[in-house]
Image 1 (cartoon, rainbow, N blue to C red):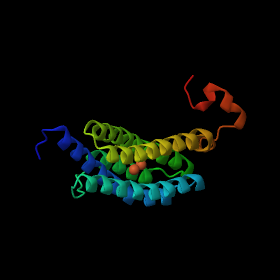
Image 2 (image 1 turned 120 degrees about the horizontal axis):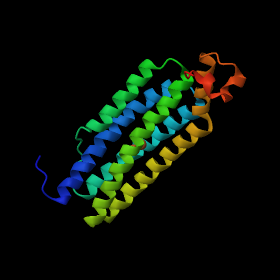
Image 3 (image 1 turned 135 degrees about the horizontal axis):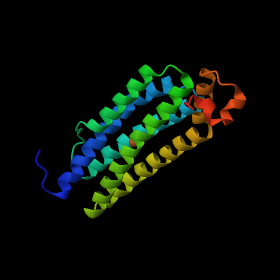
Length: 186
Ligand code: FE
Ligand code: FE
C-alpha cells in the first residue's frame, strides 16, 4: 500500500506493532522454557501476560479509529526472534544461555520502545488523545521490562555466566585477578 499521509504512516506503524506483539506472544513461552534462572523465567512469564494486554490495547487503538485491527509482517522482530532461536539451539551452558536470552529479549524491547515511541508521538500529532495514552502505557511497560532485564543481568546472571566460563577453562580461582590468566597471550 502506498503511504502518503501521516495518518497512513501511523496506521502502518500500528499494524507493524500488532504483528510484532503477536510474534512475541508466541516466542515468550519458548524463551521462558529455555531460561535456567527462575527469576528470568518468571520475568518472561510476566512479560507474556503484559504482552497480551499490549495486543488488547492495540485492538482498542484500531477500534477508536474505526479500523479493524490488521497485521503487517514485522520483519525486524521476525529477524530478532530468529536470532534468539539460533541462540537457544547453539548455547549449551545454561548460565551463558541466560545471559544470551537477556540480550535477545532486550533487543526486542528496544525495537518496541522505538516503535511505540513513534506511534505515541504520531497519535499526539494527529490529535488522537485516547490512543496516545494507551500507547504511552505500553511504552512505559516495555521500558520497565528493559530496565528489569538490565538489573537481572548486571546483578546476577552475567556474573554467574562469567563464573561458569572461568570454571570451564579451569582457571584457578586466584588467577582471575591476573589478566594473563584469562587465556590471553603474553
Ligand atoms: Fe509489547
Ligand atoms: Fe515487549
